[in-house]
Length: 389
Ligand code: AP5
Ligand code: MG
Image (cartoon, rainbow, N blue to C red; front, side, top):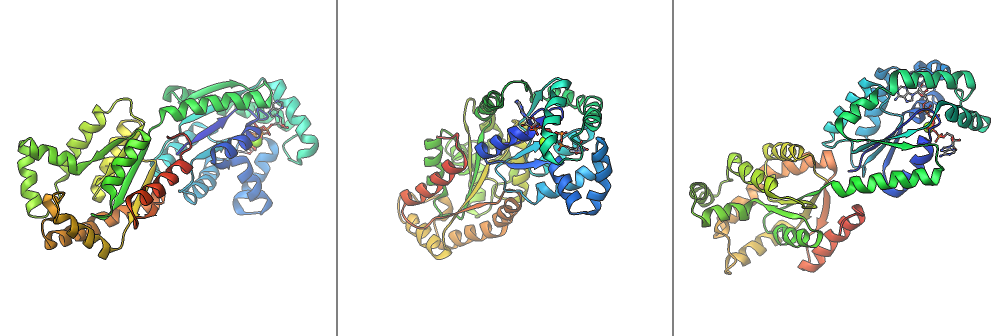
């Protein structure tokens, strides 16, 4: 997800630059000014409350803003990212935005401030006023909007300066030059952000081999709890011994063990483009742990993919594998295989449902040979994340 806020006084060019940004990055556009004007046109309760305030150039109460913005964000949880125009405009709104982003398990990547002197704002808005039909595009109201901006909105910049995500741009340059500068800032931001994929699928769906191949293709770090656990077994560590007992009784390894391993992996992976998680999170508890671990590293989940394969086909595949030398210690018999499938059904399916509500899980058909399935997943990732590869 890429979340950007455009900041600046009235007439700075926020609306103008938004057009270019929405197209280029396929962001979901949220302009509180437009949303309020829509409410006014519809004569809704919120619109009626806001109408006179807007006409006089004052700021609409945060209580109204939080209602319209929350509704818009939560109705679009599967957006590629959000572009905020004219929000946040007060300190309170900055906190509201943080809260909403946390709810979607994401964060604001950058706040771009278009800086123009007052007289430029006034001149531009008076020109726009000739055709805009906006009740607030006349000199008296423009001056009041500018005063509100410098009194209440400008101080909000400190909040973002402290967070280290503020970028100021000279907004008096031509529209094209301003667009170019914004593009550069976002490019830099995108190169910093990690691509984190969670790969789901029943045992036997091919998620392991797909995960390894995807990690290789896109330069991601493959994080699979299975191999990490096996490593402990091979090294015959204390942890490894405990794990063997659990495997043999067909149970899941407790979170305390898994968390330590993942934590170590994240901490030791420097200069990677992102992570691909396979076989984790397996339980709701683990899904919260993963959110916390990623947040600690200043990042979050970018995409959740589920490889779908019908149950009968899964059993066939696992049974066939158990008769080869690729047999895993946890599927040496049909009853163990069935137990694992049941475990997935009862513990992991609720996790997928949770992610479905938050991120919309992308379902990929896992039937067909390896290359076909690989091509399906790769092309989805390439079309969604233009900066990978
Ligand atoms: P809102 O609709 O957000 O208006 P605003 O902040 O006053 O900003 P404008 O839309 O006037 O300017 P803009 O920066 O988008 O500039 P534009 O691209 O159009 O808010 C309206 C009201 O709603 C507020 O006063 C408040 O009451 C209420 N409100 C909204 N959000 C709120 C919130 N979060 N909390 C509380 N109240 C809220 O460009 C302007 C003109 O300049 C155009 O004609 C354009 O063609 C031209 N132009 C743009 N860039 C350039 C350039 N580089 N060179 C030359 N000309 C340019
Ligand atoms: Mg605007």
